[in-house]
Length: 331
Image 1: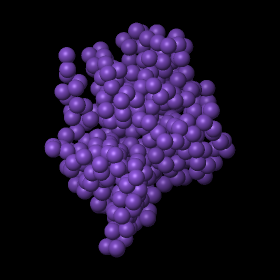
Image 2: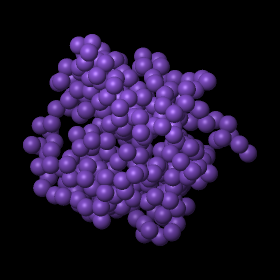
Image 3: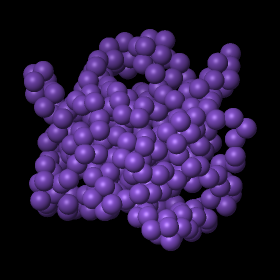
């Protein structure tokens, strides 16, 4: 089956622009651009919009009435699922890792405005309890006669990954219209892995000479390279790509997580300040700040050759800036 034959509901404001980052690129000795998927628009924008175009088509086809998902306090994915539920007359249930907050800021505020039901799980018990809790909400929906749809963290499924196969097709068309050759490297922050898996499939089809590097922003019980390889292979099977990926085919840098997922890092915070003050580009402390910090460091270490054409995928997340205002303005 072709990519175009997979059911998809248009949600995003597409295509999003590709913009130069001349000052930072010059300082790093590379030709640097940014793909502005923070401008996808729907529900506050970000990379989850592209995944949800495919996932919501599936949910709607099944007659879903209750969308159930999970993430951290400042989960962009949870915010987007809440927005999608509102758009399609569904109920959203968000089971989030973290203690009940004293106030609702950033994505948590938007979750509430979109009308989601939010449940908080103690961080120490989260990994043991999250599966049964989401299933419990699904069982309760079935008992009420409502069809539930459990969406994994980050929308990281083979079907969701197709959103970034579509994105690479879009970028390839943009570069061709502009008379530009394909970039040498695409870099992005990696949380749950679906975006990276889609980029891997997409570059194989449309930009076979382009390498994809993910900057991990969280730890993983299963190595990221293995998880993304499995997802890319399964996503490729949906559209008859005819290729399998192994962990050795996936490039992920894991030194830029900081102390934990969802906790700002000094390197990430520095990147946020530098990009805001020099390029007027807003990054966030959970994903893109750490992702950009990692990209800058691997360029300086020579893992990306001087003079390379590099495209940074901006996955959105600026609502998460506001809960961390005190940390970001220290000094």
